[in-house]
Image (tube, rainbow, N blue to C red; front, top):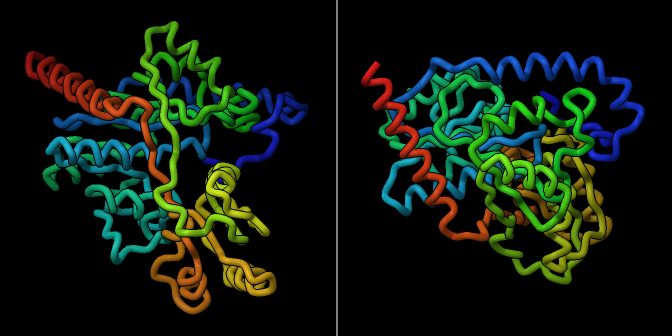
Length: 345
């Protein structure tokens, strides 16, 4: 899957998307077929899939974290399942946030391991079984909606209200992972993030088909006392603009900025460049929690950059505080029915 989305994906349909229509058609046919194949892989506990229509940047990881916190508040023992994108380990692994590096298990699993038992696995069924062995009674799967490699009981699709689905084309002509019609039929609910209008058309379509729609906002946990201060901001996430908007909303003055591809591990020369630019202008360095996860356990200049960074972390806040509990309840009920059907067969 593409980690750095071409800019034309997020603008009106142009010549690039039109030129790639044949490849998008083929990709969409294959992706749609894969989604239509019924999975035979299941575990006895409820599985919530947190996915999105498009490649990257919608807010899946903070959504998964919010659901894990709600599950723990209810006395459940949630576990989080990830493919560990950006990590190098090929074996199913229980993530240890204090010892693993992002280069091993991926940056997002390191963040999620703060919230609940987290496993990274190339084969999701293997990861799900490991979580069950760890004693979890609810699995939250970060991504994997289009893969259909594990039976899920509730599929929550996160969509950013400012970017929506971009130009609406399927990869490689656009950011959409599979034909929208196919995805709509399989999802359980949509989570619209933010107050933009780019997702409204899809939200209305989902509502007309009887799908539930939730609304949430990404809110910073703390501004670290940086209001009114000039900063050098850098971000290697799916949608860097989202991070910069958060800084502006906190009245933090972005004097310099640097974008990197999603999941990007900084090279030594890039680290030196950031430190040099900050020193030359007397700026505080700020970044995201995901970028800091990739700097964790680094040495030399990487450790220096990590020590000088202020992290602006965010939480997914649902407009309806009861929404996460509703999602968990629906997953539990669906799992119960699934297990009963299996027992009768």
